[in-house]
Length: 276
Image (cartoon, rainbow, N blue to C red; front, top):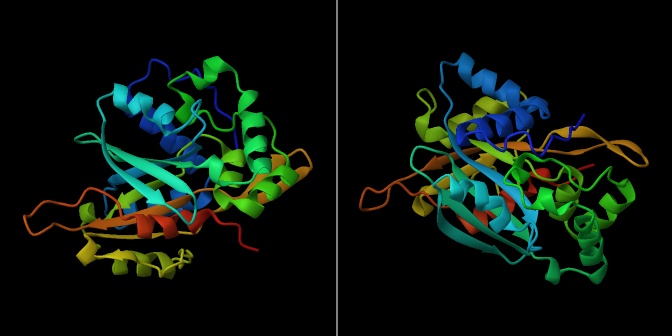
């Protein structure tokens, strides 16, 4: 069951504690995450998080700049930006030495129907201003009250992404295992095979492996767990969060690539698509 977290609970916590809460929230509500984590630990691995990702809308009250505030305040710097024309998204990523990268995307509301725009803005209007201005919004979960399955389905007809944010709100959409930091798995192929042998289904949109060594980044991901959510009309199981895996390569100068590939991320987004 998806829980809503108190938005004032980490106001004075450290960045490390914020990541811990994000992880606890993410892993406790997605059964596959803990299983995968434990499987790699059983193989003697110490798991390093490559990046954590968030989703939002480009309404200025809670756009990516709002979600980035606590990270920027802690010392993160903007490092890259990405366009996704097909899905009508824009994203930026942020970096801080010794910490996971942070990837924040936002839906470009003006590129959708008037109905979708009105629906999203109507729900944002209901969120108290003090919540929107709080640096704890990234762990706030759903801010829009108990969702309607009818509204969820209407949004999903235009954008799987919009429906996901409406239902789940503000939380880590995924964490990412850094393959570079694994001892016993030297390639993304070996990681993928290990997961499939253990019964996990991977996102095959655009191929199980997104990207290539030539692009200096390869990524794969599980399909999102189906999680029971309480809607006004009753309980329904819908896609929640997923686990991602990333292998990075060095360029001709020996510098490890630290950004993202828009074409690959475009397909990774589909890990949360609703599948019958």
